[in-house]
Amino acid sequence: MTKSPIYREAQARLKEYIQTHRLRPGDRLPPEAALASELGVSRLSLREATRSLQTLGVIEARHGNGLFVSAFSFRPIIEQLPYGLADTGARFGEILVAREAMEVGLMAFVAKLPASVELHECERLAKVMGERETAGVPTSDVDKEFHLRLYRALGNTLVDQVIETFWELFARLGEALKAPGTRRLAPIHLAIVRALREGDAELAAAEMRAHFDDVRRRIALIDPADARPPSGEQAPPAGQGGAHA
Image (cartoon, rainbow, N blue to C red; front, side, top):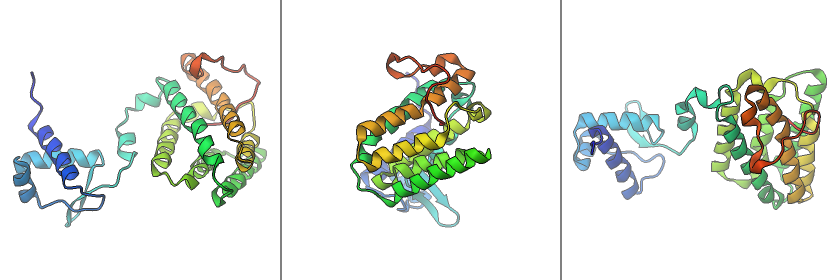
C-alpha cells in the first residue's frame, strides 16, 4: 500500500489539531517551531502542509503576524475547479439540476418569512431588469443580485455562498448563455416575488422551475445531452415559457 506524502500527513494532523483545540475562524495558530513539535512533523513538512491548506482556504497567513484559521468559503473551491467543468456544456447539466433543486426547494422557506426589505429590493431589481430589457442593456449583474437578495433574509451564509458558486460556474460558460431568450426576464422574476409576498410556496416553486426553462434551451446550443431536465421530464419546446440563468 502506497504511503501518503509526509506533507499530507502533516496536513491531516494540522486539521485535526484545529478541530481538537476547537479553534474558530480568526484564531491564531502557534508559531511554526512550536506547532511542528506539537504535531510531530518537520518544519519543512509543516510549511508544505500550511501552503496547501492556505490554497484550500482552511488557514490564512497574515504578513508578519503568523497563521490564522480562516472562515469557511467556497471561493477556494471555485478557484480549484477545472475550467472544463463549465466549458462546452460538459457536466453543466448536472450543475443546473443541482441549482434548480436548491432554489426550488428554498421557495418553501422564503415563503414562510414575513415581507422583508430584501423582498422589496428583489421587486425593485426585477423592475430594473424590465427597464434594461426595453433599452437593450445586459441584465446579468442585476439577475445575479436578485438571486442573492432572494435568500438573504434566511440568514444562511452557506446558501449565500452556494448561490455565489453557481453564478461563478454559470459565468464560465461565457457567451453561450448570453444568447437572447424567448421570454423576458422581468415578468418571471416579478412573478416569483409576487408568489413569495402572498406566502404561496407552491406557486413560487412553480415560477422558479419556469425560470430554468430558457437556461436549458441555451445549454442545448452547447450540448443537447446536458439540456435534459431532472426526473426525465420533457424539456419545453422552443417558444414556450422560460427565463435567464
